[in-house]
Length: 429
Image 1 (cartoon, rainbow, N blue to C red):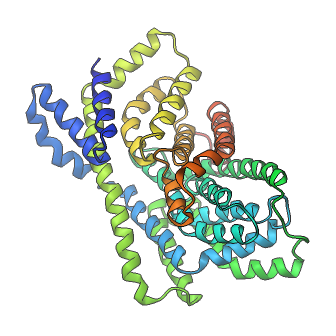
Image 2 (spheres, rainbow, N blue to C red):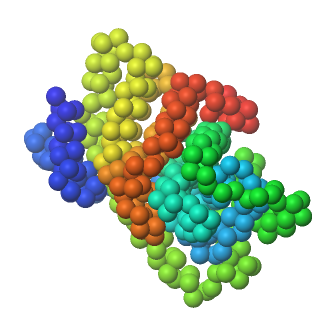
């Protein structure tokens, strides 16, 4: 009953449009007061401060800054031109270019919204210019942007690792194959849609010379994920240090291509600071909420209930999928992480669910939430420049959502898919 009361109050506050960070903190305060031990409120400042001081969390503002630098520095144009010479001739044409470009860009930014807001504007204009319906184009931009946080580097994986103490390096590696599967699934869905609507593609394959030229133009941006992942795997730097390296690298590329001006840096830094503070404030508030969950031993009571009902690992996974998908309709992804993980982690451990694979599944589920109205962050990001309306986006996004859901279920129940690379490179745990 206490579990239902806590989450019931939280959901009620969210439904009446109380800001997420306030709803999380206020729920904690109300229950600590209601439990008759207001002295515990003295822990509030400490828990909020403690929740944002982890070394791993330093990666978040730097990856946000890196994404903003890349969007401003002309790097996105070079990535898009390279992808166009590689896949512009297959069914779906420029739409397939969109997906491949998002895969490449995801190896640098780690953020779905950064992909949608930056590279997405270039992709949307290119598709509309070649005859795509503006709403179809905007929907594909939003859908392909969610590949970003799955293929490393990834802000959600950094956040998950900081909360659970799971190796961020293993999480990064575990995201590769699921991210590629997402891209393939979207390309299949787009190919079917393109044939139905007769969307054009390039008349001829790009020549070897054209591909080589576009590759040379995009070579240094393409090296970013190699430097990040290679440096982490070789032990040259940690995932947190990698976020600083990619920031410096993005800035150097911007100056080298002469697309990034010194006068633009203060604005980019200020934007990155405001985005980082917004996320870290939620993390601080959610840390106190998580302490409430643990203090009241709610995971223990949930585990006892599940065991009493004879729940199995598969049933628990389906319950998690159902809860996160439902929450994704109303909450932003990082908030879902912070609210649910204090409850889910002891349950996952109890039922012997691999925590690396569990992290991948959680990120995939949250990416689905980024595409589901009424609070689909990527849909809002794309509509801010496409101006096609949320209703039009919501109607067209379902084929891509279905593909992501199928891949999520596959990863959830066949963990060896996501665990193959981390086990191969770093050894089995």
